Each structure stands twice: as structure tokens, then as C-alpha cells.
Image (cartoon, rainbow, N blue to C red; front, side, top):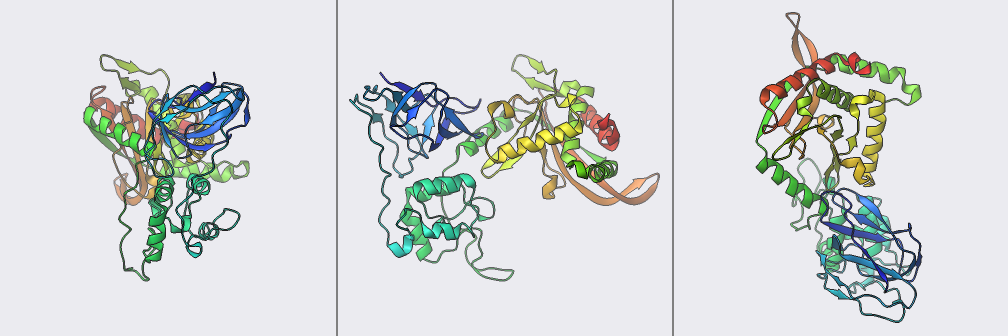
Amino acid sequence: MADIIEMPKLSDTMTVGTLVKWLKKEGDPVKAGDMLAEVETDKATMELESFFTGTLLKIYVAPGGQVAIGAPLCAIGKPGEALPEVAQQTSGQTPGGQQAATVQAAPTPAPAPTPAPAPLPEVAQQTSGQTPGGQQAATVQAEGRLKISPLARKIAEQQKVDVSHVTGSGPGGRIVKADVLAAAANPMSAVAKQASGQTPAGQHAGTGHFARGPVQQDRSVPVSTMRGVIAKRMVESTTTIPYIYLDIEIDAEPLLALRAQLNTGLEKDGVKLSVNDFVLKASAEALRRVPAVNSSWEGTAIRYHGAAHVAFAVALEDGLITPVVRDCHLKSVFQISTEAKALGKKAKDKKLAPNDYTGGTFCVSNLGMMGIPKFTAIINPPNSAILAVGTTVAKPVIKNGAIVPGQTLTVTLSCDHRVFDGAVGAQYLGALKDLLEKPALLLV
């Protein structure tokens, strides 16, 4: 009997996974350790490994399908080997737009041939722009003008979706995965919108300061796996945690001066430190001074962590993720900078491994680079606190009794009042302020 590969649990919060792409096709030989497919979780896109050696006899899930944990993905065995009967129920819609139905795999004497892609509804040639080679000429031309994420482009190529007719729902009209899947489910809709002269999202319907036409097209976009998990966890956080918010203003001039000096002096060595690198280091050192903040609520107990594993928020096209700099209290600012940049890139590419984004004991969310002077952030359980970092603001300040130009930075600590009280949070912010206003201490 052939062996069944099931959808594994690839993250701590994963309940379903999206089959992005098959790396093998039916009939291909497979060895244990070979990568079979790319699977998107609520956190990242990961490769699915085979634990069996044989032939890929049957694929049960088409690219783009959402599959529950433990549901069958494919069967591997010897050529001609009988396939076990499986019931496959995917959540959401398949790329063809039909609700996934139960798949019964009856025993068969030989591997099934590779299925041909489901044909799209026929559209006039001049509208679809499809070339004899199967590629769509309009897609190639449009990608030079339209914003589209790498994952969305990959799925569009697989599903033969002309992205020049797809309306993007991402930032600035960027086409994301959900837009491509929606267009694949209803290919005529995108063509009809193009023919009617409706303007894609992110593009002006007119010229000048006040463009005419709709802000964007009315539409309903399926919630991505990541956005669904974020919604669930944020509701859980704001409805179960009693919050207390504390903020403090920091003199940022010493930090900015030291950062500029280091970046100038070490430019030839490729060093480019950010303000966030110093904040991550200072956060970890402040946890050493006020360790009660480095803790988690466990219902009947409070867990106090011996190491400062500091996470930082990274914005993605359909959500955010928090990679973790482990043992941040033991690393230099330069080590933290290098590691944070590498983790940030992996996060953008959706290549983070579970160990890269789990186990954080404290979190930093920085919107300073977007010009936000001050904000509050939502705690990511089981952490008991999160630090929100605003931008540096040029403003008059009082020094030595005189009003002089200055640079200030406001940070806000969101605290879980079940774990510690406001006085402890205030002590933590005091320690953080002292470190950031004397940044040379962070280099010791």
C-alpha cells in the first residue's frame, strides 16, 4: 500500500496550509529528503519534505488549495501499487473557483497520468492576449507597470492569470496572492472590468491633485491564512488581557550622534546601524535591569524567563510577523544589527523557519521609519509586554534651564496588568531611557 504525505503543522498557530506549488509531478521518482512542494502557513512559505522513497503516485491538492493539518496531500509508493482510500477536504476554494470536494482515491493498478490543467473559460483572443506558447503577452507587458508580489506572480503563472486585468488590493494597488486566486476563480470578471474601463486600484482615474472616479473597485477578497490568524490572535489579546499603557520621552540626540559616528567610521566595513538596532539592544539590557517584564502569563503561574529573546515586528504584504533575536542580552549591537537584517530579509521572502519566529519573550514594534511620532501596540501572547517606538521629532527642549533645539523619541510600553503593575513598567521605561540617552553603555 502506498504511503500518504499529510499536511504537517509547520507553526505553533497553524491550522491550515496553502499548497503554493508542487516541486514534483505525478510519476516522478522521489527520495526521502526530497522537497515535494511549497506550503504557505500563517507565518511563512516553507518546503514540504518527503519521508519516503518511491514514485509520486497521486496528488490530491491543486496549487492554491487550502488544506487542514493532517489532511492528505499526495501518495508515494511503487509504480502500480494500490492507492489507499482517503477523504480529502480542503478549506476555501480551489484555483478553479469550485469548492473543494471530497476526493476518493480508489485502488489503481498503475500511477495516474499527470492531469492537464483545468481549462479557463474561453475569451476572445484579442482580450486575453494568450500566445501559442501558453504565456500571456499582456501579463509580460503589464508586469513592467503593475505592482505584484513574487508569490502572486508565481501563482499567476501557474494558473495562467493575466495580471494586467487584475485589481490589486495590497498597499498602493499591489497585486497580492488573494487577488490572483480571486481572478483565477472568476476569470471573466477581470476581463469585464477591463472592457468597462474601470480603473485598477492604486491608479488615478484622472489627472491633477483631485482625480475623478472611484477610490477603488468594490470587491470582496478572501482572507489570507496569515491575516486570519492575526485577526484571531489580536482579538484574543485585546479581549483577555487587561492593558496598561505607559510612555516616556527620550532625548535622542546622543543616540543619533553616536550612530552617525559609527556608521561613518565603519562604512568601509559595510556597517550600517539603525536606530532600531540600538533599541533592540537597549530593550534587552533594560530587561536585565527590570527582569519582571521578561515574563509570561500561564493562567495559574507566571513564567519568568532567564534569557531575553527579543522579537521585532516586520510588515509583510498581507500582515506582519515577529522574528526573534535570541539571547539578545548577550549580543553586541553589531551582532544584533546583522542578525536582524538577515531575519528581516527572510521574513520578506517568507523563508523564516519556525525557530526564527517562535519563543520570543519581549517584542519591539517600530513605526518611526513611517513618520509616526507615537502609538500603542498590541501584546503578542504569551509575552507580557510590547514596546512601541515612534519617530525622532525635532522640537524645542529645555536643557540647563534654556530652550534649545532638540531631537526627542517617544516610546510606549503596553503591559499585561495580570503579570506586573504600572510601577514595574515605569521602572523598565526608566532603565530604557537611561540606556538610550547614554548609548555608549550599549557598546560595552
